Each structure stands twice: as C-alpha cells, then as structure tokens.
Image (cartoon, rainbow, N blue to C red; front, side, top):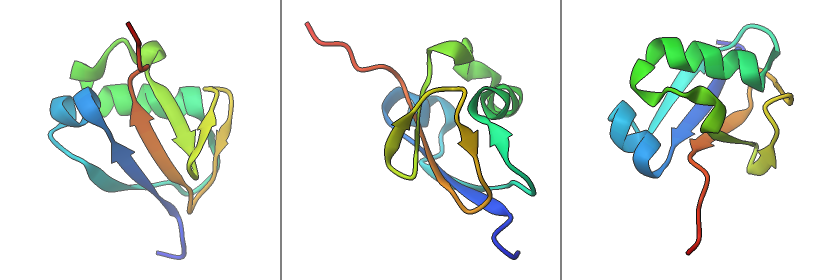
Length: 83
C-alpha cells in the first residue's frame, strides 16, 4: 500500500458511536483536518456535529486546519470537560 493510508483511532464516546476503536483509511494525498472530518462525518453521520471533535496527529493535539499526511496516525475524540 506504499504508506498511502492513515491509522485512525477513536476514543470514548466517539468509539462508542462508530463501534470501532481503530481502522485504516486510504489517504493518497495530504488533506486538511477539517476536510478529513467532513469525510468522517459522511462515513459516520452519528458523530455530527463534526466541529466539536478534537484531533491528534501523531500523538500531538492538532487544530482542524492541520494537514494530515499519508502514513500519519490520527486520533479522534471529544473535548474533555472538567467540573
């Protein structure tokens, strides 16, 4: 597959909603986090609204404007709220 995939991991309620903890996605070229989240929303409409979701790319918190590269590891999770 020459590295043209990303490893995607889902945490907490996101994993509950997708019923998946980890999967590989084809990614032939870089994509912005916001565009990738839109594609995620098409695959898993139950996650909407996508804008609330947080991303980590290669274990670093990343804004939605960040670029996801083929071969990256992407984690998707909801904001953690304290009380």
